[in-house]
Image (cartoon, rainbow, N blue to C red; front, side):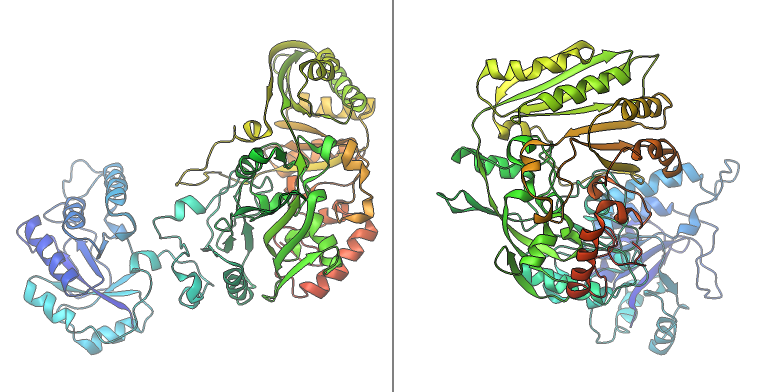
Length: 617
């Protein structure tokens, strides 16, 4: 049975106060919607007439919003007309748009513009039921008095009530069984019409509009969320920890998102062994803050706002990488929920094959609900931010590559640049020296100064926590990324004149808007390639580039890619499923596919990157 409401006719009532009283009576009677309309088609048609007579509907709707607390408020979208200042009966579109925006701020999710059908005045229960069977969310009946409101309310049958108002349900996306959300997740789930939707729809870098966001608070609830996802295999599925993922794959359009942000606990398991347990929803900023009092740190990319879940299943090429290795190199065990809802623990002794896969391709095998890391003792570090200007970008890239190659493993420096302006390139270096000795820090950084003219510098002795702490906290309104990220990634065995020439040409051509080199080597290369699914241990650098369009960036990227070996999927947004062939060496990919058929044979986890042949994200 649809919900039930009333239509108040602006032309048939004497004042806004009278209309508000009718709305209050409808709310007290348990009705679901009050539609504020102009002169209605006297034949009892399904839509209000376009012509407006009498009181302004937006003023009345605002009055109704202030006089009520629960009932949804409908203002027909058909009231928006083309501008005609000569006819006072027809509103100006720009004015109506502003009125709609203002009322949306006041009424929130109670405001709705469609999704109802109008019954004839005086309609009985059979007529209402007949209209409801056509599939409308709400049936509304015209009224002109409190007595008529009571008569309409008497038509309400005994029926199960939806967990969402009609104003919310009107925004639901097709193909999702919203009324079948598991009971454990109903309270925290967010739909497109909910007040909190704007805060969860997008990620840091990508705009999104998922049809449903499920927010489990335990491993059992993750299993419930995955059961719901299995019943919706036709929809995109994103798994999100903190929403900062560079690839942008943790949101989508019209699909499902399982947001594990609530699983964010951080606890010390063994002080002597430096063993800690971390939830996937924690950020690296929070992890660094929790570890510092113990004199510990865990290398974790280069930005504290990133969530643990995505990075700790992909690799983790960070500012402590050359000194202490990748983030996944510190992983000792995971608790993971598989595609079929099974909860297991994986380590070098328990499900070792799955533990191997999780360290580099984890997003394809399940949702990790707990990570156990062995962290490092890290005292104060040298933190450097240097800005250079050069007219010879190719030489600058070669100088950086050689300086980083010769640097001791306690030094990890990243490079960022963009398209030259008026023949000059601005190059930013930022990096970390794992030493508390100022003289050592300066000595490590000096070789990089030959890159170009030093325009700005900041070198400080600080804590890893302070560096991670520069990341901005995500407020209650969430991320506000927009559009689709367009990025490419690869591993560079070594900086060579040929690669520097291709990169400089691509940047001068303006097709690469942002270009980054991340230093590898050192402790990263100490781990045998076969130990984890992340197999590219020998490259000196990891390369990432951003552009505006896929075709544009591919044209610039192809000459550079000829010098690379493999790619880092976390930084690659190509829609081509064949990119997975470059992401893993052939033997590794074969093994991953065998494990995928064992642990996720139906390919539930496919949207981060499709491991199985023929799968499409």
